[in-house]
Amino acid sequence: MIPAARHRRAASVSYPRVFAVPAALLLATLAGLVIGLTGSGARDVLAWVLVALPLFALAIAWARRG
Image (tube, rainbow, N blue to C red; front, side):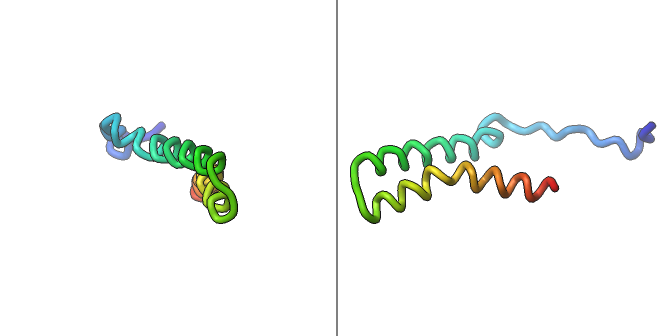
């Protein structure tokens, strides 16, 4: 059993703060899809990077947990 003194209460966090990173990843992914459809060459590389950002974020999150 955890002593009462060591028990931490969850901090209250606002919705904009919780959803800021997922919203940024959504916008980056959508931008990558649009850029990938409208150009070629360097734009394709940029599109790949933007579409892969959620995977990079997931890898970083898993590395921090483990």
